[in-house]
Length: 509
Image (cartoon, rainbow, N blue to C red):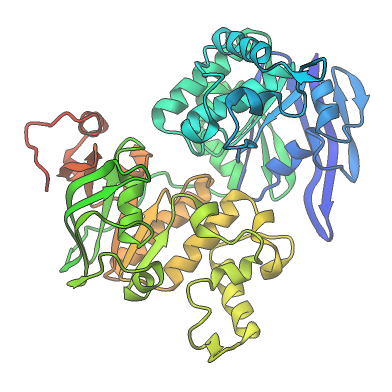
């Protein structure tokens, strides 16, 4: 059997924490090999070992049958290994070409040959149907297009083996379909791919084989066409997982959130929310469905005080909170699980324990005057981390930056739900989470609803919106196209509304 990559008995430690323990992964030439595991199971760590970012304590790596020492990413590149990271390694103020050639700039007589590099990048882009403009600035292109730049960066350096770490975590459904087409094209061109993902549907659709890791241990490798999502989920979390959310019928009470004729502009002054009306009642989950970029981000930022409104009102419990600062909005009774956990959810260089009290550190019982009780901080952090299964290497003192994306997300959700707000705004709450964690988070949202709280769920996952919501508000071009009952609606109906097509019954409720 010809393997282009063999990782044999890999062990990686961080202090006393064993992230990878005796893991074996073998990649065949020309296959898409999925790496599956819970948040914090050690998947990204294993791939960072392969890419030379970490050095293993034990084990052997073979590339095309030859034992190698991959001491840094440059060595990985020389061996034909490229990695597309979950959080892109791009300089926003640079162009596509400048980012791709960074560190390996072609020069002539001391000058960088930008135009020649751009032509080569254009040719690569066309060959792999990536449709990337070599002269576009990174800050001006979509997340999906930025990912294509990362793919081009690996191809430009001659990668034959590509590692994708959670490649669909930040993409819209359409961008996911396009990425899958790109992966298949890469395989047809003779590349070999390792893909880390939590999404079982995608694993079943694109992979040839799956290696499962659980709590840093290798569970085994299975052939995709010989397994199914239920078996994979059980191998991943060690128990049966329900894909169907169980909840009783909602009994909505009085209106908690009342948005009236809201108009919000983006950073360029363009109206993104256009006279939007929406109500969320006590004891219900309202899901917001829509294609990314139709005003969801600006709406959430306006409600939570992160963005000024142009006109209209945001009412909470009958009180006008329009234009209040974020802390005042929080104190009024709103919890916010943000869409971008790094930008709005965490202080990455603070310990995770301090992040868990970011909203309450100045209040009793944590603080009395200017004196903060750090024992109380640690007690609260440990309780939340235990309840939400936030896994770290060094407990509550672990820097937020060093946690996996899924564990960062669970810490944020734990912090916001633990405050027991009247309205919980959950924006992409399960992005980057494994099926076991998704099941748990959905149960927490329903638990808040059943306690008489209001929940506004914003998600690009249609099955999540259909599964968890009591009502679904479909947003298109900054307005609510319609509000529908998930029991009486199909995904096709939602798709039409999301594209701006009114159904037989319509309106801006």
